[in-house]
Image (cartoon, rainbow, N blue to C red; front, top):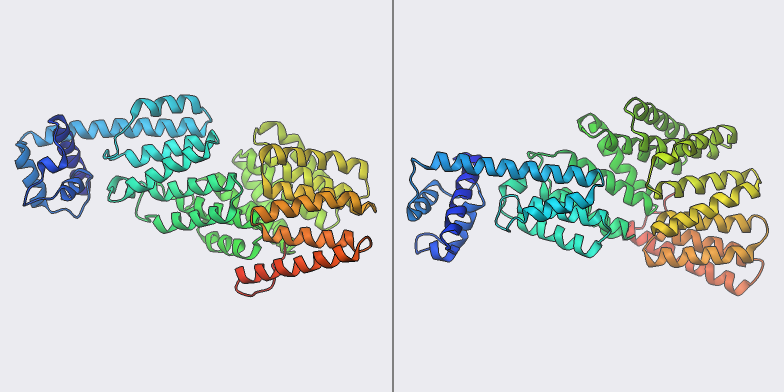
Length: 444
């Protein structure tokens, strides 16, 4: 029996049973269990044709009328699928109020074929509203309802729900848990199903989470794995994210020529496809590459492009990295008065967005601003704040950097504090080595 046909017959059986006020237990007998009837209603493919026919007979459903009833149910399913697609488009367009109203009007029961899809979208909407606990509950419901649901399996709903859970953790600065959910999403992914882009979004997001944690090597492994498959990705922004990620990771590893190559290729690709948000990221990394080469004239030219694009984006977290790096550029040029406003703004935006990985970078740069001018005591408060944030959110690479800079400050002020900081560096280094199986600390 065709899977589509099984699903439609199951929906007819479910509808008739409910119209008659029957529970699964009321329809079950010694020949068929409630669980088997539930599987039939949910369109589980492995249920035997004889069992399906048995339930039809028990309900007194005429085989002659079945095609007509199935056509009616198919039309209803298509209508609901269209409504859910409309809701997702509204969420992506940030029309969340209208999306919520449309979801509320649907209110699908848990045994409906599209119930997992419904709860996934509810979770997605709640993430946009930054209602984390409610979002995670909705997404957990979506994952629970995916079990045995052939419709959800075909649409990769479970895999996408795990991706959304990872985003919820990311926005709450729990990078380790975000990585965990991407792994679960990849494990749940159905390569024969629809929405194949979900796999690459999961891999992209995992790479970004690792990059935020300072885990350059494993992040680069993901990019290397995906790179031969870029042509299979049907989302331009996802492809461009991999260009940015490859360039940024290579830059942080000191491979500047290759980093520049991929940044420039990405910029050209983004420009041709009018993807401005990717241009923002790619021009930022290109400017940073020039800065790493001490080519400050070209670095400034790149950052000027970025600043000219900033009014196009409401996503304030994008500016944190850019402002931090512009501040660092002016620090390298000893133009201290120019550097401080950018660093102040980066910290302000990082605090407002509660973006801990980017905020710790901005705070570190501000500490450097004071330390490099000989004001180590002023720098201490910034580094101490970085250490606390990094420790709280398990950002071990950044915690190591904080203790290192604190030791630089204390070296000529207090030898006891200096020794304490170097001991803390050693402890964090041991933790990093345990995480990575004993290998040496990665370049950040």
